[in-house]
Length: 396
Image 1 (cartoon, rainbow, N blue to C red):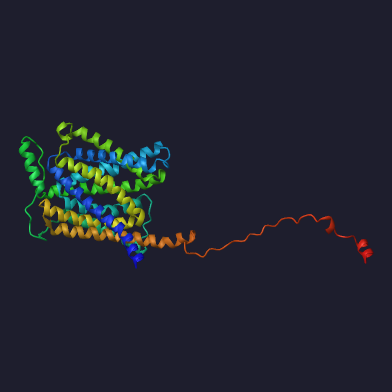
Image 2 (image 1 turned 135 degrees about the vertical axis):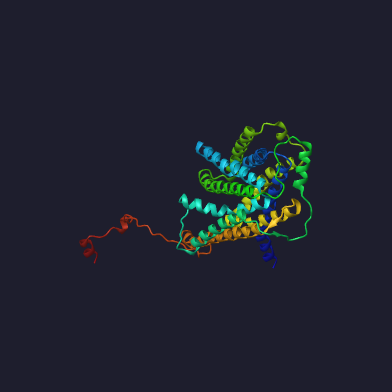
């Protein structure tokens, strides 16, 4: 009984780890919104995030992989640069721009399109077959269409307000925005803290979709980088370093105001440390451990949990309102996500018996092969020399 209880506890560790990861990633959306509402340039925020992440991941990669890491090649460096551009600076800048025009809940819901977009890109790049005549293939196609339909519903249909609990009348984003405008009355930019207009909602949806597209493209490029240089921590640290350089250069091109780059003990520093050190640093180790223990499909199943957490926190802390269109669109996207994951899981389960035939199973009964080698007979000794016919007759 004790052994069974210990096994259950060991099996629950990856589940607990993924729950913590989703809570932390949900907090990233909240801190993004708070930092932008405080007047922080979103490009500077992304640059600082990857700078802090590089500072955390570089020593970790050196300590973990210093004895087995091979020499870097130019091909690996170029791939890391492209991965940092797609999955880091481009994806994050588009994401936070879309969130600024819409809401944290809206942007979080759009991220569930990533598996469907990844499936489409994998088919286009011939990394994966469509297999439309099979049930898993049909599930993946249907899930992709459901995700696209949910995103369109999120964008173009608002609907009635949905009230799940009494309003808290707490809006941290509005308070930060009011404080920022009172201390900077000449600021030209207006922080969007109210409900976005239809035009902003459409543009924010387009930006969030672009973020999902580049993130899905990064997943495909990351698979190639992992084959070229199979050292996970080193490639991740290198990609974060590339993203930091790109994001810092991009931010400096648009905003060279020292006040935007100055960090003090306020929500800006808290957002940078949270997103860079905790989300991109510590949680990456936890996520990698969970994927190693249970596989990438297991980790993907928990993604919709972040949407629920962000919706609750945004309603309680940011004063965001839920509408029927957002709820229905999010439900369609999540259903589409699970349809794609179900199809991928069925295909992996169908391929596993063939893989199992190639390698001997662990429970197979061991056997011993006896190999008989044929050697020429040894030369006979003098006592064993064959007698001639005459000698044999004489002996008789």
